[in-house]
Image (cartoon, rainbow over the protein chains, first blue to last red):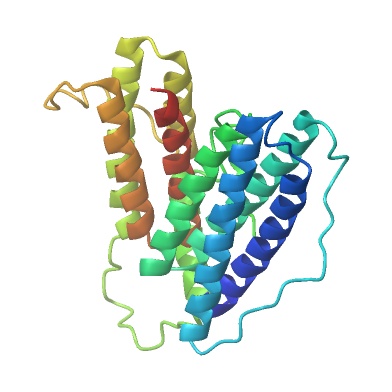
Length: 144
Length: 137
């Protein structure tokens, strides 16, 4: 797989993340659950920035950035704060897996970008009531 | 997404190098068969990471931080490495947080330097795990 293809796959993941966070933000009360609202908003901003950066990088490379789907499935009910933060953690865990995969598929500046993204998404999980992991984004090592 | 098997370090590194050759379509037709193969740079890289993890493990053990001890042991196992005794004999004493910050950067740098994509992925994940611990240290 070329690095351009790998970036396209990562961009597709960011499209999904931005969509899901948009939905989750709409289900979160700023006044009643300020900490959750802030965490969801911050995550939304971060993924939107990554999406835009990836799309720009792909255009710079002469590629046509993959477009977002019309809609994405949000797993499970998203009514309570626990359900919302669980859904948000699922987004971050999915992105972590994508970033770690991107690390393996790239070199130099792109790999550096992927390492940074993996580190940031792992830390973001903690703001969403997550707990530290032993191998973020690399599930097959998790039971070691 | 591709998921690599759990393999001993040197076997995994050997497969990683072979995988890179296959993916890039490289062949060995133009190489001198009598030439001594170059040492795999990832072996030395992993040896360096094991040394860093050993230092961090001893510091975490001294500090009584069970979570970090467990983390570093798991990371050493993933690299098929054993903690090295006396690895920190010449390492200056710094705070646990500073030690972990150095380790996080070292793991990220090692990920950048790895020839094997799968090794780079594992090292990047380790750096992210340390980043998570730094939030609360």
